[in-house]
Length: 531
Image 1: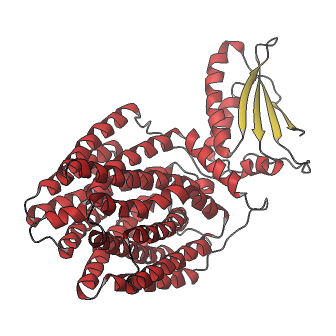
Image 2: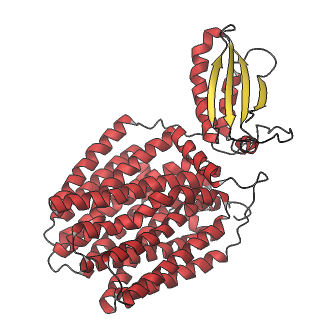
Image 3: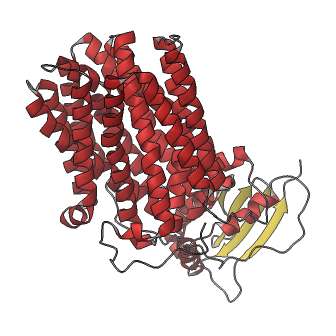
């Protein structure tokens, strides 16, 4: 990481291009543009190649499933590693992995060894690279831009991703038409290697924790625990899953929609993808205005409705002249929903668990994409391409409306600023085993209901920090005596919780202390659970 995050640029937090004034972000943004260009080139070449290897709608849709399923399977380990290891080196490794897979794919095509199952296997391996790099990149961005510019930085990432949606297919389509699919994979390898060397030049300082690295299994458990105990994150995950489960139908079946249009060929497919990317770029650059016009809830539902309408129009469009504007609108809607939910996720995750939290977000997004691609491909096999897209559009609007009603946002943003207000114990580390912490409160029995309700917030806070268990004990003979009991995996993991304290935790501590009677603070004891 650079020595410090630079102050906000003079262009102000509402400038769409403000984050690009920070050199490190600019370097990472260009790298992300190249990385996503290779991704789209690979997906376009693989999808088009599959239409000649096996024209079945299910096999064509499975290309997208194979590309995104690794993210669902490997996202959490990848996020945990990104929180544990040197993020620069880890990001660099992902680029070289993608280059290696592109080289193998190229060789298989040139040697005429390619088959539908092998293409899916190589697409899956390429997806492993996506699974590794997305959480680490998502965790790095808040390090290099001021917090008030984070929405604009994420919107610019959307511009890079959707700019690559135009550049990648155009390059891939031109290469496929002028040479062959093999040369698409050659260019993928070259761009991936170049991006890896650019990252290698970045001099980010990696600071190891005095407590040592977390164990992978423990880091994964804590990441899942944090997300499960965070009501805002659960709501975000539900919404992103619903949106991509349905919206992926449009992309998964697009090669077949393009073939069905008059004169449908590789160029038609490329034009439709480019139109969607252009719409997404326009919406991303207009995101500051969109955020002023619409609330997060309104952006989410409006985007869902517009994407559904765009999918229906594309499905039944008689000519390319109607399909292209519909894809443009779909792209605008897609980036509006994705940006709103991504910003919300970044805002509710503290730095120490950011990569793990964003990896779970990515798992929900990509997992629903992979499932949706297979689902709507199968529905298209049972009915037709047009009917499958129509069913997906209608159900997306209905289910999103239900989700908005059942999980309304509270609109309260927690203070996630790291705090050292809680002092770690200085006692020598005990033997191995779990650690039990007891905190004794003496309160007015008349306020017991209020206190117990507040302690549920304390339970969520302790569990989000990584505690194994939490209990609230009530003395049967002394009604005003309560004991908060926290169990940690080990002494080291107990100390890690002190490094994870935020401003919101300090505020919660003060609210609990307001119930405590007497001049002395609550009594704290720490016990080792003997094996």
